[in-house]
Length: 66
Image 1 (cartoon, rainbow, N blue to C red):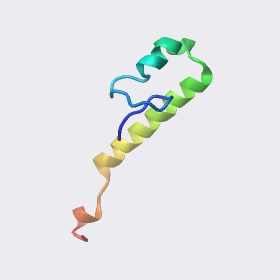
Image 2: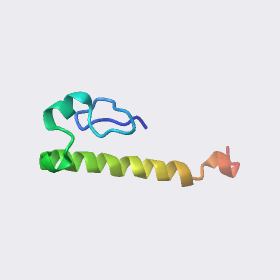
Image 3: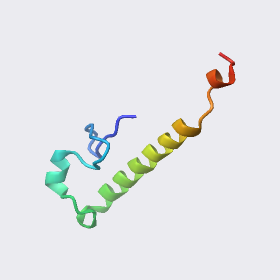
């Protein structure tokens, strides 16, 4: 899954905001607006869920069904 900034732009896997959003909001989470903290945390939960699913999911192919 391609990681995205809260604004929707693609970002690298190690960062939470794109360059434009970093310029606007800075890198200190304590100073971010509440909606931005929520969006970043929610996206992080989604990425973590996808990683767990990729690691533990058993597909029909794995079971020999297809």
